[in-house]
Image 1 (tube, helix red, strand yellow):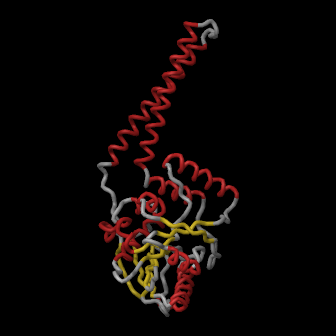
Image 2 (cartoon, rainbow, N blue to C red; image 1 turned 180 degrees about the horizontal axis):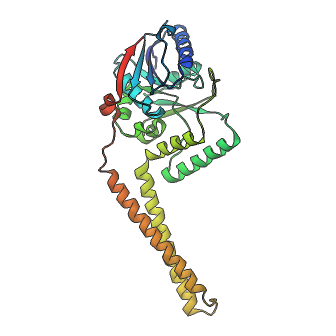
Image 3 (cartoon, rainbow, N blue to C red; image 1 turned 90 degrees about the horizontal axis):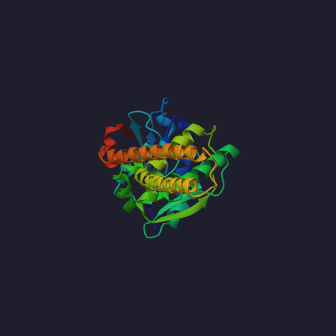
Amino acid sequence: MLLKNISIVTPVFNDWESFERLTQDLSDLSKKLDLKINLIAVNDGSTTELIKNKINTLNLVEIKVLQLVSNLGHQRAIALGLVEAYSYEDSQGVVVLDCDGEDKVSDIPKLIEKTKNNSIVVASRKSRNEGTSYKIFYKFYKLIFKTLVGKSINFGNFCFIPRERLAPLIFSAGIWNNLAAKIIQSRLPIKRIFCSRGKRYQGESKENFASALVHGLGAMSVFLDIILARMLLILSSFILLLFFTFILVVFIRFATNIAIPGQATTIVGFIFIAVIQSVLLVIVSVFLALNLRSVKNIIPAVDGQNYVIDKYIN
């Protein structure tokens, strides 16, 4: 697919100096590829202000800044940016990336060139630069995600979304919590490419264990109905296993001579407690699943205007 007009969405929180560097790199890319670029920065409740006269649009068609009502978080800022990108009717697609330089502008051509049949192109990391403890946590998280959801997640926000694929994403609730998880859930065609992490424009990453945990839980929340269904199956299987264990204990106690005095009573007591706890968990899971169906979800394309208090163009 030959692309000549794209949009860029990037969330910004108190990192305007990196954003300035990003605009320069995007401008150079625009000139090099003869590519029209509209840049949408989502100001996610920053406490510092962008100095507008430091931003030179240069070869960029337009730079638009969305001012959010408060700090909504990285994923929700992206969702609102994608809603704005959908309003650019001439744009053939949108690239989502962080403004800190770790998502390299030089990789954007690889993203937009790999799309085929309007597939979403996502960037996976060849390797991670974080410490050992973070890598262990990440692998453990992916294992839990695979177990509970039945799908693998191995990419982040850096991606290219053709315009034809935007509507199914922004008119759904899942993208409000996690873009990557929603892309997986949408069953839209996905093409994966490998990109190495870039060097930050300045400073150090603000991500820590707590923020990574919140991000991971946000991804899992997109599949909450599937997770609840799998938990019900697991708990039901566990209760069935306890029932057969109970039958086996009773059989050994009254039909054989190998039972140790008092042991059967203790085991039956443990089984009874485990069954009661499992049944309670099943009941809670069922009511939670039913309650989720009555809760109004936030649809970014419909409700997004409630969270944007200002738009200005440089």
